[in-house]
Amino acid sequence: MIKSAVLTALVLSSTFAYSVQDSQNAQNAQNQDVQGSGKSSVNESKFNEMRPKKRRMQMILFRSTKFRLPQGTFYARPNKCYSASQFRGVRMGNVRGKKGVVMFCTLPNCMGRCHVVSRRITSQISDFSYQIRGYATSYAWISPYF
Image (spheres, rainbow, N blue to C red):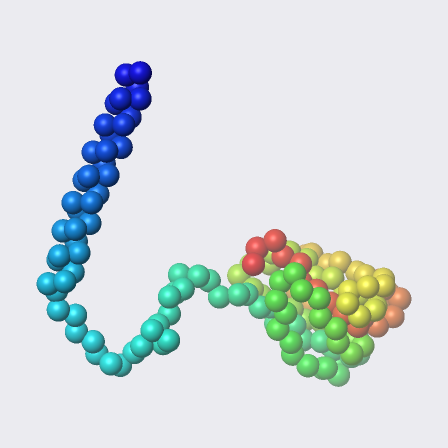
C-alpha cells in the first residue's frame, strides 16, 4: 500500500516536472532566431556520418597460372557470392586486416567443388586447379565482420 502511494507520487511529480520543462523549452524555441544559409539542404546532409562504409575487398582474377593473363579487377562485399568467367589464380587486397575466408567454387552461385582459403594464411593463390580439379567460376568472401 505504501509502495503504491510512493510510486504514484513519483510518477505524478515526474510528469509535472517534464511538462513544465517542455513548456519552457517551447517558449525558448519560439523566441530564438534561426539563420538559414541556403548552401545546403536536408537532401545534402549526411545523417549517418558515424556509420562505417561497407567494406570491399579487391580481387584480381587471372585466367592462367602464375598470375598471367589478368581477367579483371573486382571488388567483393563480404558474405556475397560472385560469378565470373573461368579463372585459376587470384590476388586479394588487404582490407583492415586479414579476417575471414575466401571460397572458390567450380560452378556458378558458389556451388560444385569448393576450396576455402583463410585470409590469414595467404593473400594470393597462383593455381588452385589442383584443389578443385579445374577452373573456378564463382567466389565469395566470407567474413563475420561487415
